[in-house]
Length: 377
Image (cartoon, rainbow, N blue to C red):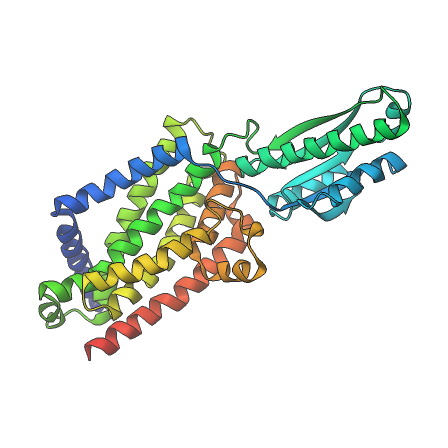
């Protein structure tokens, strides 16, 4: 008996999905919206985007433990830009802090630092930066170079010396050449799905009301749950297609190496799209027209993009806004996609992104169903 009910449910769902896809794809403007925004954003952000840096959490590995190294680190602490987040005993401890994004940069002072300065030789200071945020990495290493140069000039002037120069050797993880598009293009893989899925899911029910077909839909044998599922699947498929277009642009046009797994990447995208569909259907359920949907989306989308960390690091935001980002699914999607693409992170390492996406989907999808049901009865 349950097998027959399942077959009926699947058939109705397929018919509903087919109807939604035909409604969407028969419109020339909607077909263009599926491809043109993905191409435009992929190339535009890949060539033109950049951003600034105000806050640099960093770790220190001081193997010298000398007066000179303490003096240099004091200049980092007093710069106003650098905030020391950890003091480590070995460079081998840096991996977990950079992977978890607790630090943007690390300063490593070698054991023979002061001895070389006293002998008038060239002493090296290594600066290691997180290249998944290429502009941040470039600016952080640039700031570090300025701090070291200022300290060296001050030290030489006070002692009346001419030798014993300090040189900064920078090293960038995950993005060795600090190319800006390496951070923007992977982030856009999630961003394009965000825009299109919210738009399509938001328009789905409101379009039926505006075109006068909503009442016809409600008298069909389809239950409210089947209607909502049928309206959720097409935006998900379209979002995945557009994300694939952006992935191909990043991988094959801009030649950005893909370090992760396609399975993990699409798992992250599917979880993200599920959370977005709930938000979009909630907006559609409470809207009486497509104009209302557009107003709601315009109000909602801009803050979500700004809070996502796509263009500015979340750690640079005020504490209140950093807490607000936990309600933004785009934040977790951008972080997950970047880590998968550039770092090669596995699914088990992304629980900090996957769990919030699941929670958002678990809240918004049932809530959208409740709003839809209560507005139709």
